[in-house]
Amino acid sequence: QVQLVESGGGLVQAGGSLRLSCAASGSIFSITSMGWYRQAPGKQRELVAVIAIGGSTNYADAVKGRFTISRDNAKNTVTVTLQMNSLKPEDTAVYYCNAVRQLVGTATYWGQGTQVTVSS
Image 1 (cartoon, rainbow, N blue to C red):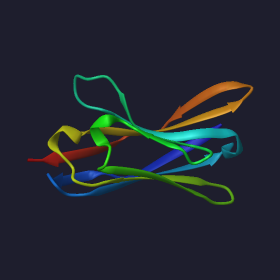
Image 2: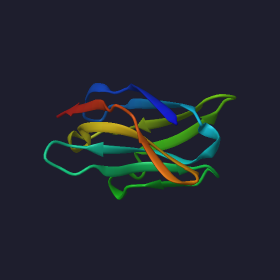
Image 3: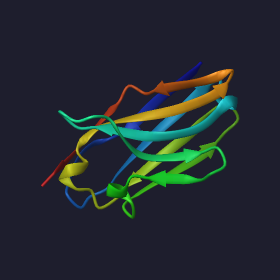
């Protein structure tokens, strides 16, 4: 099992910055990727950014050049940070941390979600 604990989020004016963090614990040795998804009211959950175990990253077109995902490995935890700059009102959503673990088959884990609100 993998436990995900998110922090960060909140309310910011357009053009501002926020940073989200997600700490993974438990069976982290088999995590192959971690990332952030978001879901706005009335919309489907969508990928924001993902970072693979090798360090490669992938971003949604809507956030490229504004958001940066990074990873910090410690002995018993992995922390993934999403630095969000130049925020826009359309970035308003609940942001969810995601981890994919591959051991015997694939398992996906989600954080509880954190609200990001960007005012115009």
